[in-house]
Image (cartoon, rainbow, N blue to C red; front, side, top):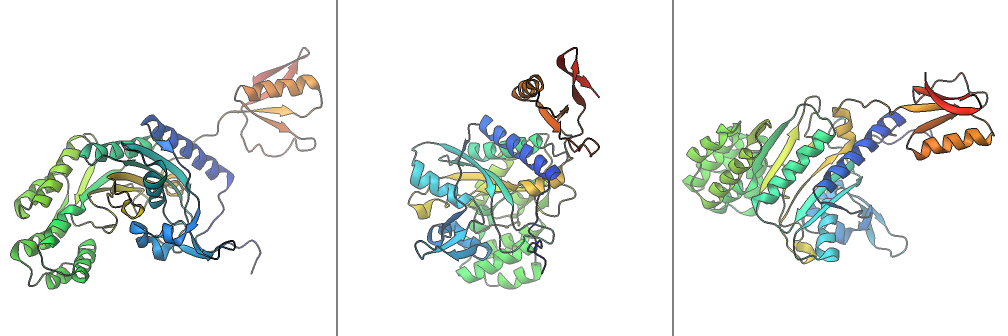
Length: 382
């Protein structure tokens, strides 16, 4: 095997793409800071007992595991940062009121999410803790969309759903936990024949509601149809009202609704959203409400947020032009070196051409050069 060969779905990021990713990272963190979100940096490694607690259990198969040489305990490389941020909110910050936290760092997956996905995403996310009302849902959504605008993502659709609809329909169904999980899987796959089989024997209201869900997808008119065909259970009505309220505050955004979409149903506790764009097979951003996330750390707090992979996002947006740079000769002359230092202090990129490399390609596409004019160094356009 060649020494330079990397594992499947693991890749080096070369300068042009790395520059674009880093610029996006800064823009997204600045956008989150503009909303009052504070940056946290959880560790890449944690003990499995903490990393896979609570909602983190769903990440078990995606988590690389190893043994700590210092303690002998089992450790894992994080596959998602949200459970770690919940631990920080619940155990370390322990604030009484609202906490707004954001993060950006690598996560590692044992298996890729898709045929062309990386196993080392660079995950950016934002979480708001401490507010149970729809205002926090809306803030998370608005921040998510502002982040996509900062990334200059041109065309996208926001899909909305709420897991409370299915939860309310199953609550009175009499089905045990195993059957409920099978129903949720069938709904996610829109497998109507399997759903028909699984709901036999359920009360009429639950059965009719569950069988109606696979066809309840489309634009905002889906909510009116759902109000007509779904049973008038409190959980169903509350969820539909919440979705309609969010839709009313997202005027000008292309919205879709899929009330049978249960991806991440074991994770979310309320509204969930996903953003899709052309050229990307899966969502470029996912989020929603997950009020159970901090319970295992001894502090169950309302929580809502979102995350995205910067490596996926950078492939969905247009490449950014290089920042203008200045080409300078190399010399030991104090006047030249002082001129270069001043330009760099002013925020300019100055590339010195080392001796013997004058004819090589200019990777920065310098549009100006530093030349000596009348004993002084000046910048002129090339």
